[in-house]
Length: 390
Ligand code: FAD
Image 1: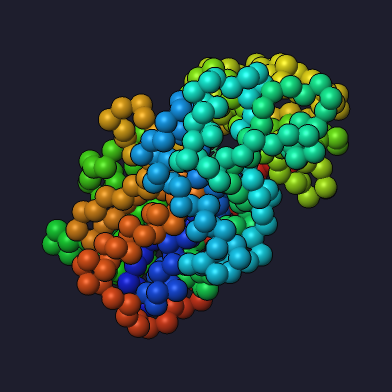
Image 2: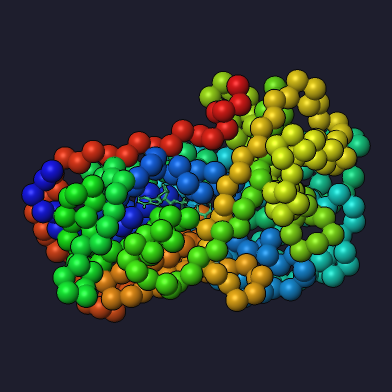
């Protein structure tokens, strides 16, 4: 136990949203403390596909939606951060791919072709052919069209590790959290019996936000979970592929990202429609058989003879939506000294931090200099999920 700790902003949850926010606030001079009960990045962040969307995927029905507009600036902001010229210095984070691709196994619907050629999408989507095709699609039997999106794909474990470095001793491993109240006002949190006072408490606990809101006696904002059943495949001959394969609907039939394992082999991580409702209903063996059939149909020249397969179940946590439309911005709600939110996409973490900073500035909460933090037990960084495949 330490003497009472006081800070400007106390953050709960060490996924990308909390860690990005923590680093941004510290850079602005705020005193911060971030509490994580498991491993940093061990929630949705570390199990994401690492795509820094620019919105093209959400415009698959052929019109530029609000969603595509809100997210359109994210690749530029992340690129600047990776180059060390942006809002955070993310030099050293591993870039897996400079681009993500849209791949249509047949022809593209006419409206999509003209949409991609339209002024709104110019410079964001370019058709690629021949030697410019992604390595895994380089084959004489490949038919279909491929578009290069100006979206990045990041190695998320290296991102989490870099954001943890930028936290400079402001991370605390803590499990049991309860509110620290004075009359009806939230003054901070008890963490494993330790009092921590703060001017603002920000919940970025992903799927854990609901239980924390319950503990605080709050019914709003309501959270929803969207279950996914992802598939991993590891094989010696796999070539890099970062692509949404289009099906008939508004969601990609399958989204494939490639992740280098410690032994030098690649792991393909499969999401998209394959991982949603029907995929969630399948058991692990049926889900693997389904993925095998999909890959055999779409890229039959890839040798998966000696491949090892596994699946991963994970829920996406989001604010409840009034319709089935995907959330298109980071989401932040406020209640007195409490803020709670979901970035809704890893790519939108900068947008989430902007919203918190704007709320602090609006309330004239300025950086202060509380006593320095004692040396705190820090949470570990999660190991890459694909290392379960040997
Ligand atoms: P999380 O990463 O879930 O972090 C929450 C943290 O809070 C966890 O570490 C958890 O241990 C901790 N926590 C929970 N409860 C408590 C508590 N009581 N006390 C202390 N700590 C607590 N987005 C993209 O932009 N691009 C993609 O390619 C992409 N792919 C995805 C693929 C999958 C399979 C999934 C599931 C999501 C994907 N997303 C993607 C979405 C993205 O991963 C999430 O929007 C984002 O990672 C959420 O970050 P977060 O920090 O809010 O939550």
